[in-house]
Length: 158
Length: 209
Image (tube, each protein chain N blue to C red):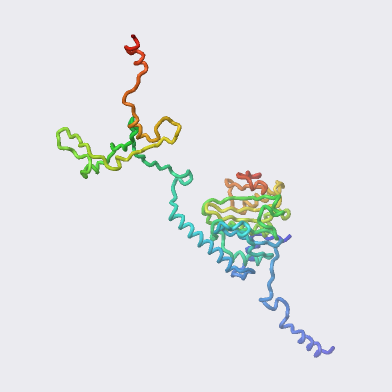
């Protein structure tokens, strides 16, 4: 069996380059081309996919602030305008003081955004609730019948 | 035969210009044969999703002498220059660098992962090649099928592929020498993974040095 130590192999190393038995230029060209493509892909990735420190833990959870909506007993929903920026006050558009001593803000006219209704229609046809909650207003009974009060009425006593 | 005749015959022999291999430097190429033929393979990184493993793995060239080895080694790009996801494989004869090859099927590999940039990776790879083609790492007989380097973004991996996975004594001897070749200290681990476990999600090494 032919064996060569590392030292022996180094002794046989030619000092100058020797021609090889395959197309080395084509081989190098393939490698250069792949490197070029990888470079472009990396550049594109860095441009459009910003790396985050939380890369290994999934995407960070971003909380979007939901507008506060209050719904009254009649089913009317309105945006809560309590958290209004002070800058808008300074601009004089809203929250203007009336100049009186008690400095009570004048009740302003509601903007279009504040008037927006959030109507949740009742899709259950068999339900006794009206399909449109706005109908509750018209259907609302003005006088309610109290059965217990009826039993205790004077007519029965007779 | 007279003296004149002998002189004439000697001149006819033309001793001053012998026609042996030694007469021409161009023709005289004494080469040192290796124990077997070796084939260099290259795995091209995929740049298109349609490319399959068989498209990417290609034989580059073969050699049978020390001189041919040096010519090829000096010409091809070194591991540090290769693009990520590239592999060089040097395998004996016509063994394909795949688990499915009958010569590899019952074998395994001694492997070590060099994390980070590893500035001397070109030198370590060359040392591994010399140990394999010089047959100094395998004193018994042709237990080694090939040697592989994987170039990845976070690490380099060098592995020696063996013919068997159960010859513990021979494998331990090879592993110890391979550890020296790769200049690994006592704190660095060299793992032997049988190819039969290669398809597992988290293969466990059967030997560790």
